[in-house]
Length: 469
Image 1 (cartoon, helix red, strand yellow):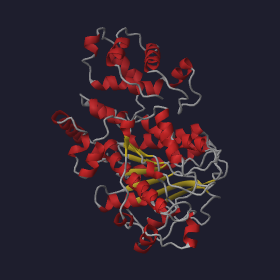
Image 2 (cartoon, helix red, strand yellow; image 1 turned 60 degrees about the vertical axis):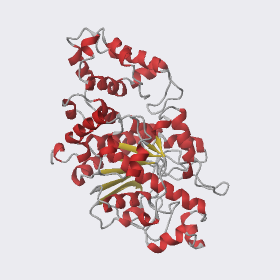
Image 3 (tube, helix red, strand yellow; image 1 turned 90 degrees about the vertical axis):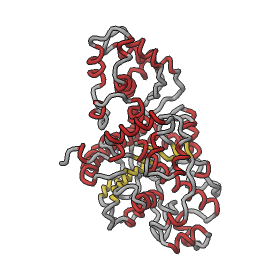
Image 4 (spheres, one colour; image 1 turned 30 degrees about the vertical axis):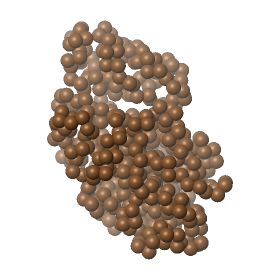
C-alpha cells in the first residue's frame, strides 16, 4: 500500500497550508479567495461565511407544493434547517444559498431530449408516474436548486474540507428518465461537472441510502474517473439492480454492529486503492429501524456512528467530503427531519480541521492533521509538565490550544452527559447548554487527567465557544 503522504489531496498539503497563512497575513478575506479552482461567483458567495463552522448549503426553494398525503415528505427540508438552528448545531452565518443548476450542466449526464422535456413540462403521464411526482414548475425549480446545492457543497468541501447540503441524493434518476422520487441525478451531475471542468480528476460516490443508487451506477458503469460504492438492502427497491463498481447487498433487519463491520471492511480499501480527490456521500437515513420503506434496523446512534466513520476516514486521508441527506420516509415529519440532521452533527465533530488551518502557528501539527484519533491527553500532559505560569502557556504553539477543543470532543462527551444530565445519545443534545456550564465541566474533566493549576485560567482566557457534542 502506498504511504498516505504520497497521495494526500493537493488542497490539503503543507504547501497549501503555508499559502493559506500568507493569504491571511495579507487580507482579512477567507482562505479560498486565492484559489484558482473556484469562480468569482463562488468566492462572492463564500464571503458570506464569517465563521469557521461547517458550510451548510440550503435554500428555502428545496421545498415545493405537493398533493396532501403524498408519500414524499417534502417539508423535511425545512425541518432539517429548523432543527439545526434550534439546537445550535449551526449558526446563520454558516448557511449559504445555491443557484439553480443550468440546463447545460444537467446535460453532462442526462440526454438532451430528457432535459428539454423535464425543464419545459413535456414529460408524459407515464413518465411522471414513474418518478412519483406530477410535473410542475415548482418541482423543476426545486430540483435545479437541490442539484445546484450539491455542486456548491462539493466546491466548498474542496476548499474547506467538508460541507453539507440539506438536500440531495437523487440517485434513481437515469440519463433519459426519472424514477423513484428522483428527477435529475444531483450527485452524478456534480461529479461529472467537476471532472469536466478539470477542477478534480476522480470522485468517489459513497451511497449508504437503503436503496441502491441504480441511476448513478448505470451512468458511470464504464467511467474510470468516478467510482460508485453502494451498500443497500438487497430485497428492496429498485428490484432490478444495476452494477456499481462495488455493491454490497444487505440482508433484511441488519442492525448497527453488523452494518458497521461490513462498512469498515469495504470503505478503507476503496479509498486507498481509488484515491479520489473528493467523496460525495449520500447519508440516507432510510436504513433506520423506524423508516417505513427501509427494512433495516439501524438506530439513531448507529446512523451517527456510520456518518462519523465515513467523514472521519475520508478526512483522515486528506480527502474532502460533501454530504447530501438522501432518502428517509416516515409520516412523522418532525422525527424524520431531526434524523436527517445526524450527518450535519457528525460533520461538526471533525471541522476542527479548518480551525487548525486558520489558527496554526507551528509546522509539526501536519503530522497529526490526517488522524483525529491522537491521544490528546498525552499531548496535554507533555506540554503542561513544566509549565506553571499562564503567560508561558499562552506562548505555546496554537495547536496545543486546538488540542484542548479536540480533546473536549473526543474525551469528555460521556462525562458532560453525566454531569449535566442532558442527553441520552452522543449525537443529539435535547436542550440548550450554556457555554459556561460546558466550560466548567471541561475544566473538571481535564483536571481528572492533569492537575496543572494554570489550565483553568488558560481556558477562561481563551474563552472559546465550545462546539456542542
